[in-house]
Image (cartoon, rainbow, N blue to C red):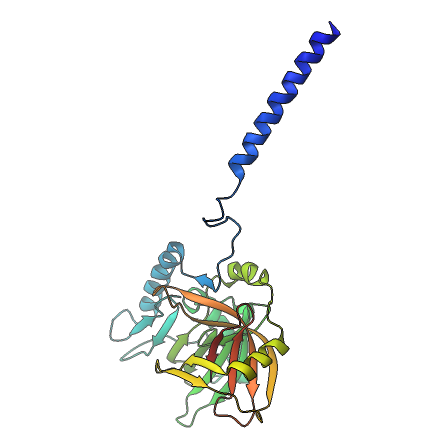
Length: 286
């Protein structure tokens, strides 16, 4: 009786082991020639999903109605990838205004900043940024009497560089909006998880040495291929890590995010260079 039970127990154990092995085998990633499930894409790609596009359509319709309801008064363009407001320059009888704050006809500086904050919150969908992640970096009065407020989006551990992460609002003393443009990154929180997982492979001193030895190979704003040999006398100072964002080289409807070292060059035509901290390539130069 003991022997029979022992045989049954062993048989059951073998079957369970076989099933477990088969289950594990089925969960294995593809072979070496195929992509692995945990393989991380880099540069980190960004594309707007369909849900945001639907939300933008609703927000833009509300924007048009509030600004006057006619195409003449609401010449609004959207950024091609982020679908944030690229340019809004009201014409005719546009009625788009900052919210009224305070009891007097003209708002003071503190009231103006609060009014701007409320405006940004109301049009957060079109601006593409969480208001709590926007920092006012400049508020100036223009020579023509208009006022300008400039913001930087700061949603990540490292600052954004490139032509993204900025918001500008130009308005009059009586609160009328004259222009609005945003290059903010919508849904930035979902990017933060991926960006936080990136590991620096090129230390700051390695980036300096690479600049010394290889110089810079980059594309200028006009699309020209440029090569720059760093003179031996040029002082190179690492400023720190940044997230550099630019249009994807492979996909016209996407952006790419680089973790890069921002390097300051002294006594050189190129003042700032961005060296990728993952693969060592030159991301951009200014």
